Length: 256
Ligand code: 13P
Image (cartoon, rainbow, N blue to C red; front, top):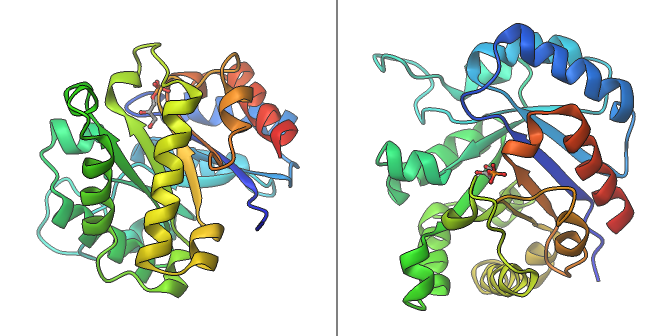
Protein backbone atom coordinates (compact mmCIF):
# COMPACT_ATOMS: atom_id res chain seq x y z
CA UNK A 1 0.00 0.00 0.00
CA UNK A 2 1.20 3.49 -0.78
CA UNK A 3 2.44 5.40 2.21
CA UNK A 4 0.75 8.75 2.51
CA UNK A 5 2.34 11.29 4.81
CA UNK A 6 -0.27 12.71 7.16
CA UNK A 7 -1.27 16.34 6.75
CA UNK A 8 -2.61 18.61 9.48
CA UNK A 9 -4.02 21.92 8.22
CA UNK A 10 -5.29 24.68 10.47
CA UNK A 11 -8.16 26.75 9.08
CA UNK A 12 -8.22 29.86 11.23
CA UNK A 13 -11.35 31.18 9.49
CA UNK A 14 -12.00 34.87 10.35
CA UNK A 15 -9.77 34.87 13.41
CA UNK A 16 -6.41 36.47 14.33
CA UNK A 17 -4.93 39.78 13.30
CA UNK A 18 -1.58 39.87 11.53
CA UNK A 19 0.20 40.29 14.88
CA UNK A 20 -1.82 37.59 16.70
CA UNK A 21 -1.26 35.17 13.82
CA UNK A 22 2.49 35.76 13.82
CA UNK A 23 2.58 35.19 17.59
CA UNK A 24 0.70 31.89 17.25
CA UNK A 25 2.93 30.52 14.50
CA UNK A 26 6.07 31.65 16.28
CA UNK A 27 4.97 29.37 19.12
CA UNK A 28 4.23 26.56 16.65
CA UNK A 29 7.59 26.91 14.94
CA UNK A 30 9.28 26.63 18.34
CA UNK A 31 7.83 23.16 18.88
CA UNK A 32 6.97 21.62 15.52
CA UNK A 33 8.92 23.85 13.15
CA UNK A 34 11.32 21.08 12.12
CA UNK A 35 8.83 18.24 11.85
CA UNK A 36 9.21 16.28 8.62
CA UNK A 37 7.08 13.18 9.11
CA UNK A 38 3.83 15.19 9.05
CA UNK A 39 2.95 18.01 6.64
CA UNK A 40 1.73 21.03 8.59
CA UNK A 41 -0.16 23.90 6.94
CA UNK A 42 -1.62 27.01 8.55
CA UNK A 43 -4.34 28.96 6.74
CA UNK A 44 -4.70 32.46 8.24
CA UNK A 45 -7.02 35.14 6.90
CA UNK A 46 -5.60 37.10 3.93
CA UNK A 47 -4.55 40.00 6.17
CA UNK A 48 -2.23 37.77 8.23
CA UNK A 49 -0.61 35.87 5.33
CA UNK A 50 2.39 38.12 5.12
CA UNK A 51 3.24 38.25 8.83
CA UNK A 52 2.70 34.50 9.15
CA UNK A 53 4.88 33.85 6.07
CA UNK A 54 7.67 35.76 7.75
CA UNK A 55 7.26 33.91 11.04
CA UNK A 56 7.38 30.43 9.43
CA UNK A 57 10.28 31.24 7.11
CA UNK A 58 12.99 28.59 7.48
CA UNK A 59 10.64 26.09 9.18
CA UNK A 60 8.77 23.14 7.70
CA UNK A 61 5.38 24.75 8.41
CA UNK A 62 3.63 25.73 5.19
CA UNK A 63 1.26 28.55 4.36
CA UNK A 64 -2.24 28.24 2.95
CA UNK A 65 -5.01 30.70 2.11
CA UNK A 66 -8.69 30.13 2.82
CA UNK A 67 -10.03 31.16 -0.57
CA UNK A 68 -9.07 32.62 -3.95
CA UNK A 69 -10.74 34.06 -7.04
CA UNK A 70 -10.39 32.07 -10.28
CA UNK A 71 -9.20 35.06 -12.31
CA UNK A 72 -5.61 36.30 -12.04
CA UNK A 73 -6.51 40.00 -11.93
CA UNK A 74 -9.24 42.43 -12.90
CA UNK A 75 -12.35 44.20 -11.66
CA UNK A 76 -13.30 41.86 -8.80
CA UNK A 77 -13.59 44.16 -5.79
CA UNK A 78 -12.64 42.49 -2.56
CA UNK A 79 -11.16 39.39 -4.16
CA UNK A 80 -7.66 37.87 -4.07
CA UNK A 81 -6.05 35.89 -6.91
CA UNK A 82 -3.73 32.89 -7.07
CA UNK A 83 -0.71 34.91 -8.27
CA UNK A 84 -1.22 37.29 -5.31
CA UNK A 85 -1.17 34.34 -2.93
CA UNK A 86 1.93 32.89 -4.59
CA UNK A 87 3.66 36.25 -4.17
CA UNK A 88 3.11 35.89 -0.41
CA UNK A 89 4.65 32.39 -0.48
CA UNK A 90 1.40 30.50 0.01
CA UNK A 91 1.64 26.89 -1.14
CA UNK A 92 -1.90 25.71 -0.36
CA UNK A 93 -5.42 27.10 -0.65
CA UNK A 94 -8.72 25.86 0.79
CA UNK A 95 -11.42 25.68 -1.89
CA UNK A 96 -15.12 25.03 -1.47
CA UNK A 97 -15.28 25.17 2.31
CA UNK A 98 -18.82 24.57 3.58
CA UNK A 99 -18.99 28.15 4.86
CA UNK A 100 -18.15 29.43 1.37
CA UNK A 101 -20.77 27.14 -0.13
CA UNK A 102 -23.55 27.97 2.32
CA UNK A 103 -22.88 31.58 3.39
CA UNK A 104 -21.47 32.87 0.09
CA UNK A 105 -23.47 30.72 -2.32
CA UNK A 106 -20.47 29.17 -4.05
CA UNK A 107 -21.51 26.57 -6.60
CA UNK A 108 -19.66 23.42 -7.67
CA UNK A 109 -18.93 25.03 -11.05
CA UNK A 110 -17.35 28.11 -9.45
CA UNK A 111 -15.39 25.94 -7.03
CA UNK A 112 -14.10 23.94 -10.00
CA UNK A 113 -12.77 27.16 -11.60
CA UNK A 114 -10.95 27.94 -8.35
CA UNK A 115 -9.40 24.46 -8.24
CA UNK A 116 -8.14 24.86 -11.80
CA UNK A 117 -6.79 28.37 -11.13
CA UNK A 118 -4.96 27.16 -8.02
CA UNK A 119 -3.34 24.27 -9.89
CA UNK A 120 -2.37 26.48 -12.82
CA UNK A 121 -0.54 28.73 -10.37
CA UNK A 122 1.27 25.96 -8.47
CA UNK A 123 -0.98 26.24 -5.43
CA UNK A 124 -2.19 22.99 -3.90
CA UNK A 125 -5.97 23.09 -3.49
CA UNK A 126 -7.54 21.57 -0.40
CA UNK A 127 -10.90 20.81 -1.97
CA UNK A 128 -13.65 20.44 0.62
CA UNK A 129 -16.63 18.18 0.08
CA UNK A 130 -19.40 18.71 2.58
CA UNK A 131 -22.58 17.10 3.76
CA UNK A 132 -25.45 18.52 5.81
CA UNK A 133 -27.30 16.77 8.61
CA UNK A 134 -30.46 16.59 6.46
CA UNK A 135 -28.46 14.91 3.69
CA UNK A 136 -26.97 12.39 6.11
CA UNK A 137 -30.36 11.64 7.64
CA UNK A 138 -31.83 11.16 4.17
CA UNK A 139 -29.08 8.64 3.40
CA UNK A 140 -27.80 10.91 0.62
CA UNK A 141 -24.25 11.38 1.94
CA UNK A 142 -22.36 9.38 -0.68
CA UNK A 143 -24.39 10.80 -3.56
CA UNK A 144 -23.81 14.38 -2.40
CA UNK A 145 -20.09 13.78 -1.94
CA UNK A 146 -19.87 12.17 -5.37
CA UNK A 147 -21.61 15.09 -7.10
CA UNK A 148 -19.34 17.65 -5.44
CA UNK A 149 -16.21 15.69 -6.17
CA UNK A 150 -17.01 14.99 -9.81
CA UNK A 151 -17.93 18.62 -10.43
CA UNK A 152 -15.02 20.04 -8.43
CA UNK A 153 -12.46 17.91 -10.26
CA UNK A 154 -13.66 18.57 -13.83
CA UNK A 155 -10.68 19.10 -16.09
CA UNK A 156 -8.08 18.13 -13.46
CA UNK A 157 -5.43 15.81 -14.91
CA UNK A 158 -3.99 12.68 -13.31
CA UNK A 159 -0.67 14.49 -12.92
CA UNK A 160 -2.34 17.47 -11.21
CA UNK A 161 -4.10 15.16 -8.74
CA UNK A 162 -0.74 14.56 -7.07
CA UNK A 163 -0.93 18.18 -5.87
CA UNK A 164 -4.51 18.14 -4.69
CA UNK A 165 -5.83 17.37 -1.22
CA UNK A 166 -9.44 16.52 -0.42
CA UNK A 167 -11.17 17.31 2.85
CA UNK A 168 -14.41 15.66 3.91
CA UNK A 169 -16.36 17.95 6.20
CA UNK A 170 -19.74 16.95 7.61
CA UNK A 171 -21.32 20.36 8.26
CA UNK A 172 -23.13 19.07 11.35
CA UNK A 173 -19.75 18.35 12.95
CA UNK A 174 -18.17 21.75 12.26
CA UNK A 175 -17.75 23.85 15.37
CA UNK A 176 -20.46 21.86 17.10
CA UNK A 177 -18.31 19.53 19.16
CA UNK A 178 -20.18 16.67 17.45
CA UNK A 179 -17.61 14.57 15.68
CA UNK A 180 -18.50 11.99 13.05
CA UNK A 181 -17.88 8.52 14.40
CA UNK A 182 -14.70 6.94 13.09
CA UNK A 183 -16.81 4.44 11.15
CA UNK A 184 -18.91 7.20 9.55
CA UNK A 185 -15.79 9.13 8.58
CA UNK A 186 -13.86 6.10 7.32
CA UNK A 187 -16.83 4.99 5.22
CA UNK A 188 -16.94 8.32 3.38
CA UNK A 189 -13.16 8.50 3.02
CA UNK A 190 -13.03 5.00 1.53
CA UNK A 191 -15.87 5.93 -0.81
CA UNK A 192 -13.95 9.03 -1.94
CA UNK A 193 -10.84 6.96 -2.61
CA UNK A 194 -12.91 4.46 -4.58
CA UNK A 195 -14.36 7.27 -6.63
CA UNK A 196 -10.89 8.67 -7.33
CA UNK A 197 -9.89 5.22 -8.57
CA UNK A 198 -12.78 5.32 -11.03
CA UNK A 199 -12.20 8.94 -12.09
CA UNK A 200 -8.41 8.62 -12.36
CA UNK A 201 -6.44 5.47 -11.57
CA UNK A 202 -5.72 3.30 -8.57
CA UNK A 203 -2.16 4.68 -8.09
CA UNK A 204 -3.52 8.26 -8.24
CA UNK A 205 -6.24 7.44 -5.70
CA UNK A 206 -3.67 5.86 -3.39
CA UNK A 207 -1.53 8.98 -3.46
CA UNK A 208 -4.20 11.62 -2.70
CA UNK A 209 -4.51 12.72 0.92
CA UNK A 210 -8.08 12.82 2.24
CA UNK A 211 -8.49 14.91 5.40
CA UNK A 212 -11.31 14.82 7.92
CA UNK A 213 -12.71 18.13 9.18
CA UNK A 214 -15.30 18.71 11.88
CA UNK A 215 -14.52 19.09 15.60
CA UNK A 216 -11.24 17.20 15.36
CA UNK A 217 -9.55 17.58 18.73
CA UNK A 218 -6.58 15.99 20.55
CA UNK A 219 -9.05 13.66 22.32
CA UNK A 220 -10.64 12.19 19.18
CA UNK A 221 -7.77 12.57 16.70
CA UNK A 222 -5.82 9.36 17.43
CA UNK A 223 -8.80 7.16 16.61
CA UNK A 224 -9.74 9.11 13.48
CA UNK A 225 -6.14 9.24 12.24
CA UNK A 226 -5.75 5.49 12.74
CA UNK A 227 -8.34 4.82 10.03
CA UNK A 228 -6.98 3.46 6.78
CA UNK A 229 -8.26 6.28 4.57
CA UNK A 230 -8.03 9.25 6.95
CA UNK A 231 -4.80 11.01 6.07
CA UNK A 232 -5.02 14.01 8.34
CA UNK A 233 -7.29 16.79 9.47
CA UNK A 234 -8.60 20.19 8.49
CA UNK A 235 -8.83 21.81 11.87
CA UNK A 236 -10.91 24.84 12.82
CA UNK A 237 -11.29 25.65 16.53
CA UNK A 238 -8.38 23.53 17.76
CA UNK A 239 -5.97 25.28 15.36
CA UNK A 240 -6.40 28.64 17.08
CA UNK A 241 -4.32 27.69 20.07
CA UNK A 242 -0.74 26.40 19.89
CA UNK A 243 -1.16 23.66 22.47
CA UNK A 244 -4.08 21.85 20.86
CA UNK A 245 -2.69 22.26 17.34
CA UNK A 246 0.69 20.84 18.38
CA UNK A 247 -1.08 17.90 20.04
CA UNK A 248 -2.91 17.20 16.78
CA UNK A 249 0.34 17.28 14.82
CA UNK A 250 1.89 14.92 17.35
CA UNK A 251 -1.12 12.61 17.08
CA UNK A 252 -0.64 12.53 13.30
CA UNK A 253 3.04 11.76 13.75
CA UNK A 254 2.21 8.88 16.12
CA UNK A 255 -0.45 7.53 13.74
CA UNK A 256 1.77 7.31 10.67
P1 13P B 1 -13.95 22.86 13.65
O1 13P B 1 -12.67 22.07 13.82
O2 13P B 1 -13.98 24.11 14.45
O3 13P B 1 -15.16 22.00 13.81
O4 13P B 1 -13.94 23.37 12.11
C1 13P B 1 -13.76 22.45 11.11
C2 13P B 1 -13.59 23.18 9.83
O5 13P B 1 -14.52 23.73 9.28
C3 13P B 1 -12.25 23.23 9.27
O6 13P B 1 -12.24 23.78 7.99
